[in-house]
Amino acid sequence: MKQFIYFSIVSLFLFLASLGGNAQTTHSFTYDASGNRLSRIIPLKSAHITKQDTLANKLSTFEDLIGNRPVKIYPNPTKGLLKVEIPFTAEVTATIRIFNLQGALVKDQEVTDTFTELDLNDQPTGMYILRISIGELSSEWKIIKD
Image 1 (tube, rainbow, N blue to C red):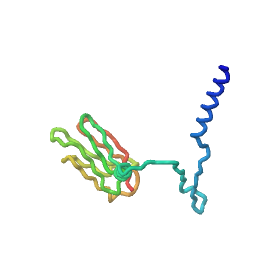
Image 2: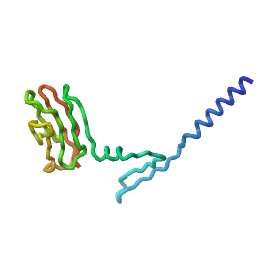
Image 3: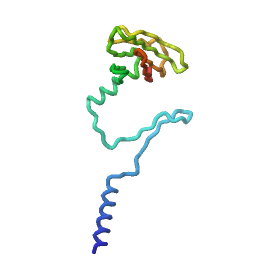
Image 4: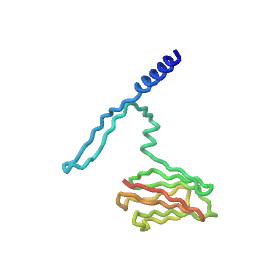
């Protein structure tokens, strides 16, 4: 009798576990004329998207601390105008430098206000490295220009 109950419980568990899983998902692909894959589409079974989620995806803000100072960088990816927020105090020198992936200095700006705007419209699309230095401390971020 114990074996029957044990077998029944295990069978019920396996049956219930198999109901939630679906091993067959339909993927669709698009290719160009040369046969290179351009995109892969994986359908979602269910999703809950809120207005806040879509707003966060449109305007990505990155926050961090350098020492005890909060730093905000937005939007990333950027179309050309990148904004950096650093609480400004005259006693500590803060600089913002942007490098391309070859290591060449693209922008070099001293922070003179809490809000600093960096214009990347004269630069080609691609990835850049943003280095913020506050006194002896520094931090780096990857910036994408669309």
